[in-house]
Image (cartoon, rainbow, N blue to C red; front, side, top):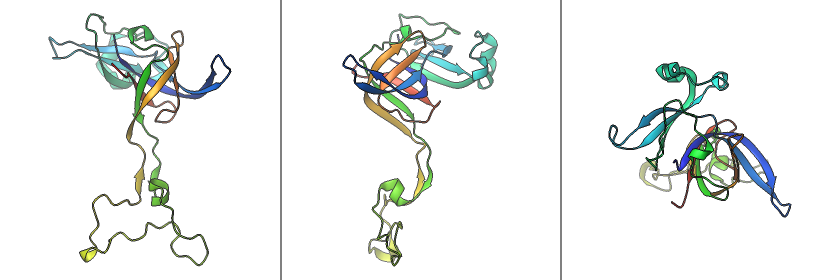
Amino acid sequence: MLNGIPGKKLGMSQLFDTEGKAIPVTVVDVGTWYVTQVKTSEKDGYCSLQVGLPRKRYQKISFSPEWLKKKGDFFLYVKEIKQVDSKHSFAVGQKITLDDVTLQEGAVVAVTGQSRGLGFQGVVRRWGFAGGPKAHGSKFHRRPGTSGCLRTQGEIIKGKKFPGHMGAVQVTVEGLNVVKIDKGAGCLFIKGALPGKKDSLVIVNKQGI
């Protein structure tokens, strides 16, 4: 069995509980991954699976061993996930389903993904600086202000907050709940927002093990 599984973020929606309250959820597609390599403790020193997500043009085609010769041509993502139960055997070409994962409705998970890239941003957007007066006579506005901090020869303290590239970093959000599992569609409905943009890769791991 697997404690985690990669997936593709489809976007946000909402579900309703028994009291009629709306629950914001993010839908993650985890039903289109195939096993591309099985690693064992005897051969590789640890147990894990290498899984691949076929490119869109190949998702409706049956798995072919020829795909393994050129994984970059046939798979959009290739990731490795840890296998926690070696008794549960997997075979190359097998499609990963939610029955192979130790996730249930109500489980607490941690989701890892790459945050949206926001390009080059100033200190107001990047670090939340208040900025200067907005009046026409001001010459400060959204500038970062002094950086030398009265140091000799304008020395800058390490870690000083400056304008720069924002986003496009790995982010892990913990303490999220699995609201619903749709095994037919191969989708997880996780409460709250997940890092990354639509159709980006996320890794869902079970917490509290």
